[in-house]
Image (tube, rainbow, N blue to C red):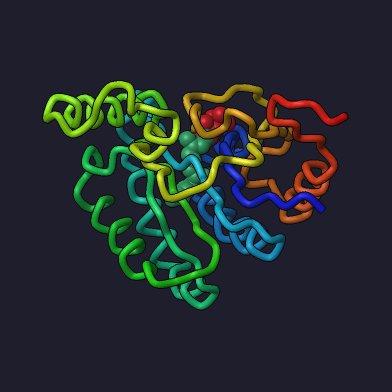
Length: 234
Ligand code: FPP
């Protein structure tokens, strides 16, 4: 069985899920946060080692101030309610994105979750927050340019591995499988470098309705894919 070490998910459709039930968009986000717990537990049980979830993109600031404010409070809710369980299960909270650009309260909460769980050796639950792949690559380029300017690096030493080692994901393997919920078939500036050879699955269910059973189906489908990484199977 082909293992999916790194699963990345675009948790789309919270708003539509809420609307279909006559609820405000924020209720969809809250249900989405609750589902983070369910799916993280299921992914762990299905053998995933790295689970990266797109919680807030660099483009999401364009939403209404109310919605942005609500989304910024959700990590507080998530970790207040579920952190004891995450700790019990050995989950390690990791962060990617421009963390310095977050409101102080949000930053503190997520940094504390990462710090409190830093010695755990189970599932790496990676929260992409204020994350945009182009921004991540830009920040890596700035760092590399500084190193060249200081004379510590020659341009010919800039290899693919070297670029990877300057990304927020430097401690994680490339993505094996990317799932997007809610029927949209877009990448939305997510992990562009890291999905170079990822398999993709687009499911019709919205994120709050995405169940452990659907996840298991996705992973089963993935395990039957023939991954050639640009080579050929003779
Ligand atoms: C996309 O649905 C979802 C988001 C922009 C937010 C994702 C956040 C969560 C699932 C909850 C919090 C998670 C953590 C880790 C704290 P949408 O609002 O674009 O849905 P729509 O396309 O139906 O409007």
